[in-house]
Image 1 (cartoon, helix red, strand yellow):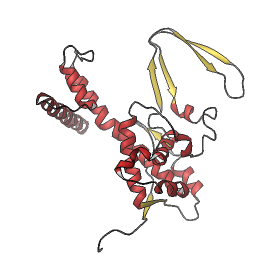
Image 2: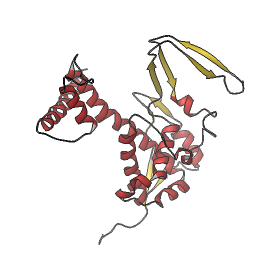
Image 3: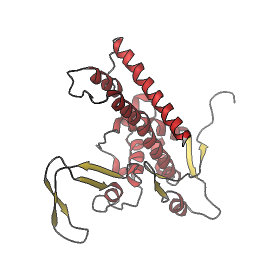
Image 4: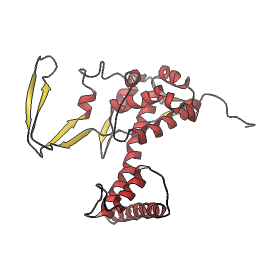
Length: 261
């Protein structure tokens, strides 16, 4: 119990230090416009519509936690899953490494981004989406697959609505062959609240890793890739986010290291 409190207190001190440091930078005239700085500035601006007047320190700390930890945790899980899928789809790996991986080419790395998006479709880190109705409304939903027509669902104001993201993203009505890993379906415009934060991190990591290393599964004796996938990637569990369990992969260098070694 005390270990949990100690970790919580240390985390709070760390995040408060980040807020204090950024406030000092703002006071010194720092002109950056990232989300963290904007949050600190808006909290100091009494005329701002984003003023957090109940307990600004508490709310800022919560937002810092979301930005620094929740974003990294979900991205890390999705990166791990992407590598798992890459290990059993060598042909997709080969397509990815054909793209240039220089910094200036980031916006052109659509195939790298697609392998990441498709992994998050298969096993979304955020497995449910919860919203509250701002007013009385009526939803029109399609009947189950195999039944024609629609039905209406009345939703009262303040009702919590939970969307099953796993069900949506594995629904054949929206995704052809939903159980198949097909990154090509993810090329094109997509939107997510933390998209830019996650995709820049994920794309750069995957592009540089796959440029130099081939990802391979660690198979048991006599095991084929489909059996490995069923044993490893289909074994998911839910904690704060949805993730697969620990699974082994191996990396094989694509080209020799530069230099005399």
